[in-house]
Image (cartoon, rainbow, N blue to C red):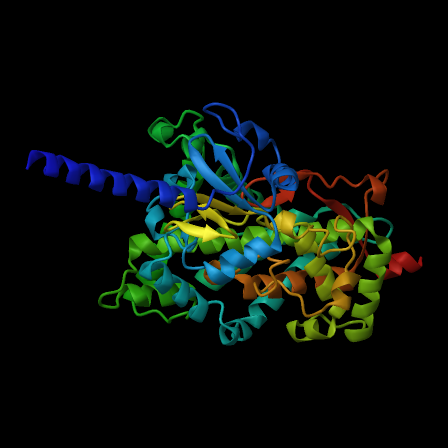
Length: 504
């Protein structure tokens, strides 16, 4: 009896071991990648410009690549084919975010829109923003507000474009002040940038927003060695927390004022804050005084920073290429004519301007690595195994420069989009995803597209531009500064020139 029992145990053990060996022999391998150093993995290979470093590594190891960054397994997608596999076939699997530790420094990070898991709470917030802020009908009804803010920008630039030689303008700061006031009026019905130094006073807000974006994109040991998170060894969370707290203070003041007005029977503005406060009163709603502030912060930062960055990059490229700038101005002159401000309804008749914006977003995507994804479960991706919990980065910067899809990929050539006008940034063409794709594509895309086109068209139609004396187009500094967003390291300063000055 004992012999039979032991024999049975051995048979079961043999069959179990055989099944394990069989499963392992048939298991898919992880994507290839560099071996890396002990403990650090490939962290030192990221360098100052991770989007560029990862693109070079992908040239050696393939468009789907595994890196060990500290103790965090990370998969990098660097081609349209891999991006399509992720967004088309496995969109739900990669619907969650890998959250940088610095994001948790803000009050109530679990109530954000950008960083929360793709669960029902995220769907409710996204649906609310999409229908109440970014829907075509809502945007059409707020067109007057955008036109007013851009006219203020043109008036500000006009003060610098004096006859006999104008003064240089910080283009990024001017664009940021415009988008900042657009977002603050859309959400709160107030200008956050006010006073005689209208655009100069935007600097505090610009600094707050960029500090958040820069710190969130900085290499932080807490992200790669989670056991160290509670120590904040580099002080990144301590550094960023003051910016978060200051913005929340501003929001609290505006919310308090609005609640006081509503309590005293004041008239409703019907802006986004009113809509949010209405939701707070709905039974069963997950909106309340605490949870709406992180949502506002996400909209506020993304809406003001990325549009301003794109406008600045576009102007920098146009100043480097006078022929492209001349063609754009000729198109504007033919469609708009003299003495009339650009309207949003004009944009559809400006294909060359649209091509300039598309080409700017291809070469200079505002978020070069998109926001990090996280695998919800084990999944097979392009024949490789990706384990549950793996961080996934999609290198939109590298994808937009893939020579298989783009002729002379490092050159600024808007004409390429005139030859294939159907390619756009709405997430359907995986060789071109500056706003991402799939269910977590940037929800503010419709507003950003309108604002960038309107600002750029108005700046080009109202003025020609030149660089300060002593700087040639070939010498213009185009160095990048990496954060979550990719801005110009050296701000673009240029001189707006009235057409009559050109004729003089």
